[in-house]
Image 1: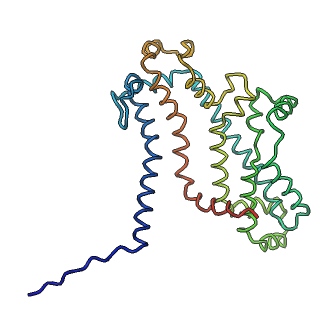
Image 2 (image 1 turned 135 degrees about the horizontal axis):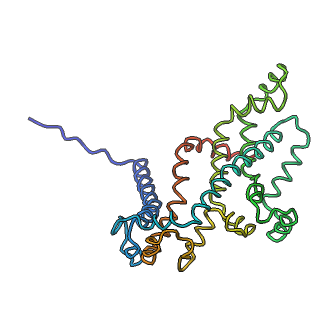
Image 3 (image 1 turned 60 degrees about the horizontal axis):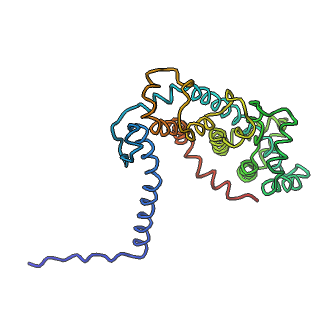
Length: 300
């Protein structure tokens, strides 16, 4: 009785390529995830374990002492409140301004749109510089106000071009002609037709605006002086660069007593506190990102 011996099929070039690609992706995943895991582990470890370098992957001497210090710091709460204010209202303003700029420039019947687009694109490569910008903002009386964070940079040229491209390529011009036959105004067409059909690009641009405002650091650093107006990122920078914590900022005396051993863990805890909201929001709009990237690849 003979048994058939199955010969192993040799690997094709495609199989080798796929195997190498999977290995590279897994390696890149480890490189990206490890710093995140390390930061979270340090935030739940004791300050002594963090400062002595004992934390490698998992928390050592687990605890929440760092988080207690973070949430006992008065400036953290005001920074969180300011950041939420800037993020919510700043993102809404940015989205509205971007949409109102992108829609007219996407209309074929808008005369002079090529000239305006040329001027807009020039701003992507040339700017007045920091000092002229500061003189302008100061002359307008916007320094050390909330308005400077909401207004300055409300329009992103890149975001506007992405949204304009979507309007041009994804919304047929025939819809405009049909809407005009029904007697709808241009603004009504934007509200009732364009916006409902543009949810994917609106979601992507809104997330870009939210992330930009949440992570805003340089603009507040330059134009704000009142600590009551500081966003969370500036408070984070102050704490991360400080060698010691201002005792007047800690309300709880018991927390203050153990602060010396928890400073390092507290810094990592603050990073987690500042990052988690964006990590929570991202999965809800991640499905729109592939389409948004493809839209942004065509900027003609």
